[in-house]
Image 1 (cartoon, rainbow, N blue to C red):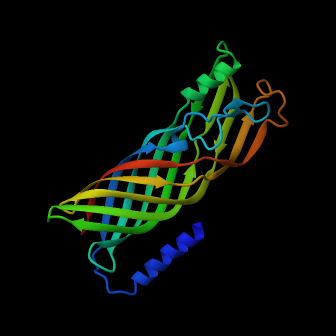
Image 2: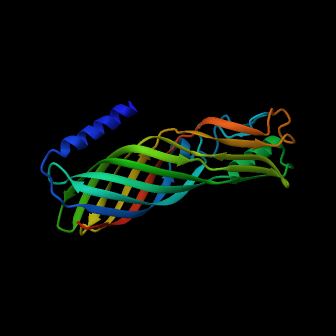
Image 3: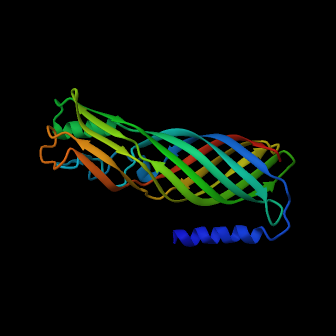
Length: 249
């Protein structure tokens, strides 16, 4: 299904290139704030537990993501008819991860007297997408637009380190993963220059690979201290608020 959507979108772009089109090209640059949604925003899964061989299990697809920030850019070119534009975009989105909730949960499972602490890294998402934007001009000053894009997201899950006193009992790190995603949203342009908008990004559930180092003092039944993570799923979705400037058009 993902490949079908990508090929269909590519086909529309190729067909569009066969029609006479205006030569105007715009560059839209913006800063943004991101608000995690769904499982991506959950602090812990219902099945969060302390395992004997695999470290601290926070639950399936749970993200622990908190509000974040980012930057983005879009190339915009008119196609087919007035108001319709082809868009090519990329963003860098960074979200911190909640360490307090899993720390409290696993402290209670081990006993409140246990000196357990968590440190979490950051979520990094880099969606590269293409699609269409439609501009509705109400006056010479104000333009309302809606958009739909699809593409590939490159994502890195946050690292996790758990310590008891001075002893590191778990150190988990991930590499980048990729998966299909889409984006939809709308916004307002003032004087064809200044913009404000809201987007929704659904970036699927990438399968992350990495390494997990465990201490046998905390997990005495482990086979090895260093364990490969071969496909840990995490669901990613968020709302993004943008504030930017459109150049050249």
